[in-house]
Image 1 (cartoon, rainbow, N blue to C red):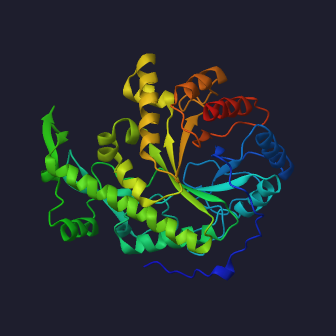
Image 2 (cartoon, helix red, strand yellow; image 1 turned 90 degrees about the vertical axis):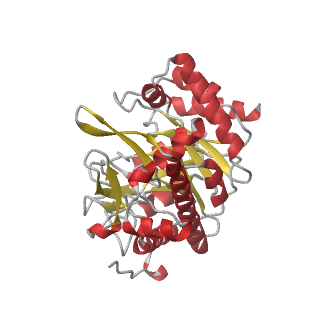
Length: 391
């Protein structure tokens, strides 16, 4: 059982000045702060502001293998960077970064997990089940099951704690998804039976063949798509519940989520592989939607040549902008480093990607990961984006 000791008065928060909402989000997403002093952090924030950035999206979770933020001494190797009574606190970094950013007129968005937020949890009944094709057995996932009521209560309580900080928004990590062979947790199967009057069983969903003596996934049966649509609706409903919860604490806070590029480029793949459907998600009424258009990743995963990549970027952005209704803000996220070599992507390449995105007035832009101190690229990149928004 989870024990909830949450109290609004127990969390520290500081008064946040009134900010006029920018025409569109111009942000960098920070995976790790590497500064050795508050002065270095402040100088970097000032550089970003002068480059045209109006918001910082800060990672406020710590998973095994993540690099630790500097400027604080970690007390645990897994948890959150804000005070919590229900999850381990690595250190209370968020409040001080909020203060520094707000002093410079920058907004702060917290980047937070959902299904991966199993901080301090060791009860296996709270984790999802997936179907293993080779063994034809259910196995335990490493992510939480959103169909378990105690998991939903835990995550909402965690987000309520986060909402008591003087943050301007929350970006939900890309773990608010379900792979094509999860969730077969008993609670999920029972709810599907209750709501749809149908069984959730692998033999009804998948075509399975044998290759080299091993059972392999071959394709989907018709019933699979009904199940996937239901999962997408459940994920969107939970996102809506998180939004409603945090706005009870701070009505001005903005909540949005990461979307995989397949969701806009090839919607049936987004639905099958991740349980994401733009038609369903837009009904959740989130404040912004962030499409991860990581061009080098797309080129590699899809086996595209340059012409194919250009077409994919244009199609993805066009579909995305058409699907996200006002007043929700569509946000494009671009990569600044190669995920394999870790080398910085030159501005000339970023500029070509920016030009390929089908602009929509008011669309936001996020770069991930954030640029290092002293880089001239963010100023050039945001100038290019603003020119597109003005056209």
